[in-house]
Length: 131
Image (cartoon, rainbow, N blue to C red; front, side, top):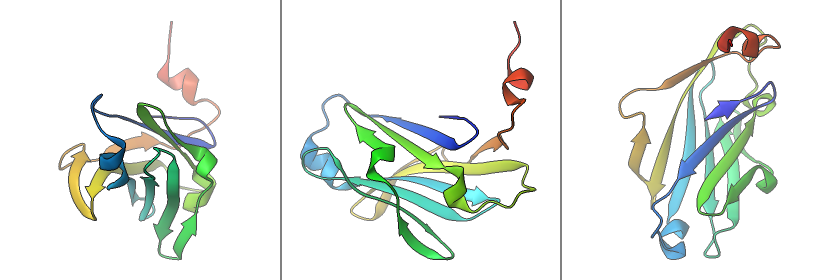
């Protein structure tokens, strides 16, 4: 995963022998746990193109731009932070990713845990990297 000031980026690396038919039965999810509860989900069609990309939270389900998701041997998803309706004073974002097959969770990363990233800020790169 990665992020910048505007978006969170998630990459799913798939088995090289996965068929398009198998992909059509899968849903790729980013599950936000804190400071908001939301689920971003992506489904692909039989041609491997994004078919449905949406966010579901307390306010309901909203479509997201299909241009923010792509598949070509790997799946890459971009989630604009503004769509999460985060409060201005949040400090961290906690999330995990999962894969569902026919509406049943078959994979989750990290298993029985979550990832926590700090609120993106202008000075984040200076705090995280040194030479």
